[in-house]
Image (cartoon, rainbow, N blue to C red; front, side, top):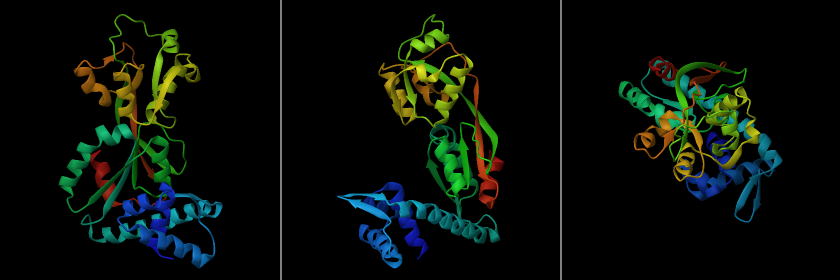
Length: 287
């Protein structure tokens, strides 16, 4: 069993698609298929169900996936230690961030980081808040940055920034009194459960006596941009980061409601027991 076989197995398992996994790893589909076949034949076990052109993990494959991720994380940590023996001269910083942060807040910071440390590579992955926490917990990232609080005793978290949520619509709100009754009767476009934007909105609604489950939700969409586009089209109102909607508000494509959600903190995440790289420390010093 080799690390390359494990990387291919994890990539295929996460995508449930051989061609997509091979493309992501820059290997041929035949090489990816051969690596999976070698694992299965060597250990006389099936890791995937093959139904037509689709593949899904078997129960054995699901159990093995957690172990494979752990081995790859430990191998990555060992490589980082060796890279850093001579200082910040090489290596890759793996960052995972929630959508708002990755798309709007973090890029200029990473650009400055690369200017200061041109020898270091930066890999940025995107997920919602729960997905970011899971990747940091599993060792798939050195550092996570999220919009919501995380309840995971294995992860250290601390505030590193903030933004604001705005309630926006395609038409001006005029003199509308945005109270609990108004919120209950509005037509909503929302982010998916697990996103920091969604959890921030849900907490605000509960604070003002509105059960989020009782809202008239027209659409639940998986990205800030899709929510913004639906709101711009007049499908309903939505709560989004000021970073996401500021250009549309300036262009009078969207209009903000007279309601104050308060500031929303951004949190850094790292695993308490995993090796903390010098590259991660250098980025945190900037933040």
